[in-house]
Image (spheres, rainbow, N blue to C red):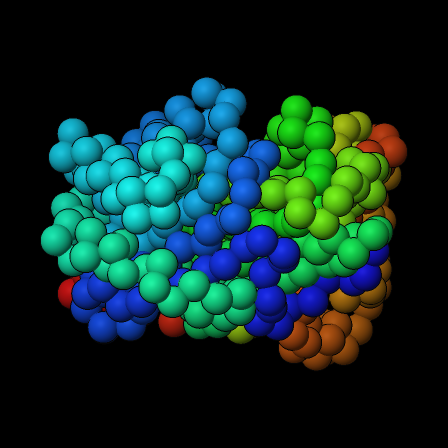
Length: 390
């Protein structure tokens, strides 16, 4: 397996994509897109656990439970179609039906995704007109798709990995704010031409999501619309899950880190690595709690090696910890080992001016570990969200 990359990419064999401006975003930028497979795909899916989930999440979950293959995905940006009641559900289904008709595939083999402002009905005349024209410009370059799904993102997010026998994995994601486990206001769409065991993929997917997209937090808010999925059309031949799953996780991990780095107003990527935990779940919980702490995030923005905020966040997480056996390091500099350690405050502060700030924490109670990603908290985050709809 090659290392994941994060540049615009050609989709795997048998996949094509198209994007256009349907007039959903006030900016006039591309806002409607699709990815289509020439053949049926086995797939795995995870969606937001929000109890106010949008129509696209609810319908995709129902299609997933039915267990059938899929052939296409259609995404609109600029409007979440959430909190729009029965009309929103009908509109979402009509989008799937419209693309299915154009592609001559079953409606239930078309997945949908919406992102943007909550509580506004979709401009269906524009959306359906756009859907009708989407298949006219299908191509294999994922760059346009990566751009069309963005909302407040500053940059597109893509990653890929090569598999034994020539198969490939390509992932495309969006997400910048309203980011917190479980998942975020994020989409993560992964496509592969590997032929993989469908039931095995489904069984493993939730654990991969837990270690990647559910380990990202920007601001503590979980979206109504977030989802992650992987579609496999099998056109490059069989790949064992033992080869496929590590590559899939590497791609998803790359995308997750890109989302954290592109957090609204972010100037630093915050990485928290926890070891010495009783379980992986507790390690991840402790790491994520550190990443979402506004106090620790503010300290990172100000280059302040205030390790007391780490102690606070770990304790708040509920993870088991032996304080006398606990250690904390900032950018590789030990600052706590059961008690405060002497360190050069100015030097450690200077080390925090890097692109990525890393905290390493050993809880001192076990052998499990986990890692989470976030970003610093800046005045720009407040500005972006104060003006979001006005």
